[in-house]
Image 1 (cartoon, rainbow, N blue to C red):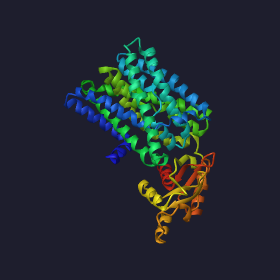
Image 2: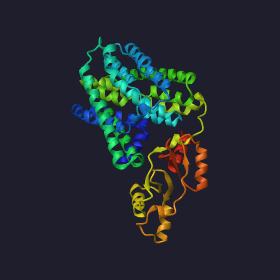
Image 3: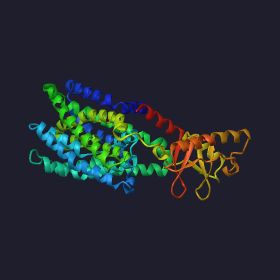
Length: 449
């Protein structure tokens, strides 16, 4: 089941239009009213998983204040004001659709901001912070913007909006962070990064598809009576995304380096449509389907535009810099101490489905690598399983820092016949790891993006 959902996640360009058509058909064939009961659970399924993997600690890291400030200025001044003016002009007699356009523009960044920035070889650390800042600032400003800009046209349920933001943003954010901390404390950072972290995003995608299905089903009768409505929504959405790409590209190109510029583009263009959908469907009652319709269509344009933009980043910003270990490494290192035994090593390799791990001394410094080859040698010599790791012939450790060029890391791996690089932090303590799997994945994405 999880494999199927992951395949769907990789094909959102196709999956979302298909789900919209299925929802439309379901809304015509049956009474969609009972589906409203699914909105809250689907919303939680959509938002909570993305919050589990959100790296809140990145907020306190410095070094890119200028690009963070400019990104949020664009996100909460030019983009929403343009969306408001565009909605007022394009939908003078449909204020709730105009509100949907505004709502989509008020909730910047999502997990895809980080993903697309990485695929375009941008500054992923900056993208992570943009995602956190955009989510937190948007949660506070969205109700105020909606009330200030649309309050004279339609009745804005401020209390309900704040309540729903608490339910669909703050509560999942708190629970997600608690879940992340519990998982890391119980299983360790390496196990979390390797096996647990990838589980959550596909379920968020499932929630997105569920909410889109319900939104289309609830709106099916109205669309069937006026099919031209969908066409009228596409033009303003294209204009909104087109201006967003244009402004962020120009600002990025003329004021920032390549990595920060790409992060800025995806930190402003990628809107958190999942949360916008959730607020629309839960805070505005029956009018929520009108609001949700234009947000659902925005998914199609956003995913397509983001994918195509990756293909042109080298032409716009120049070729990417030489890859470093920091571009690929995963946080967390599987390890045991020299006082642990061969029995502990066998259990760790088997339970975590890994090929090697780091052996640490009493000062938490890496003293060697233990691999499956070490196991085979020990078993062939009929070594007692209670033998301490300090008494075994360990393999050398290949060290690197996050700034080490990937070419140098590969050369060291070849020279030492090791497929894993241990990345040291500022205290020379192993904190990250780079494996052959990450390198192969990076090369595949670079060649086929």
